[in-house]
Image (tube, rainbow, N blue to C red; front, side, top):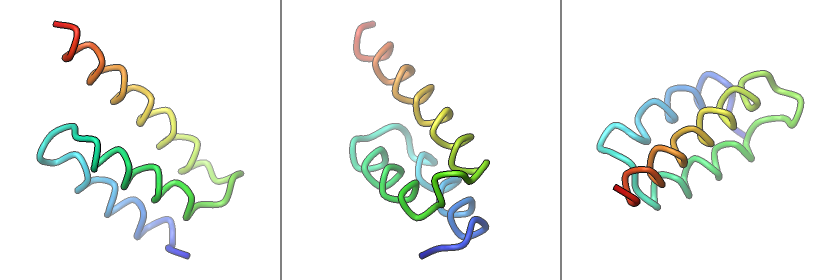
Length: 61
């Protein structure tokens, strides 16, 4: 299991090159490394939802 610090550092690199399915898969895997009650997990889940919306809007445009 990764620490919150390690997850945070890895997360910041995931979407550096843009939004891709691989990045979303890796993000989902990272979230499973955090405890369900973790504030960081909650924040990153919300951020991931927003990124998915952005990707969906890009595809529609």
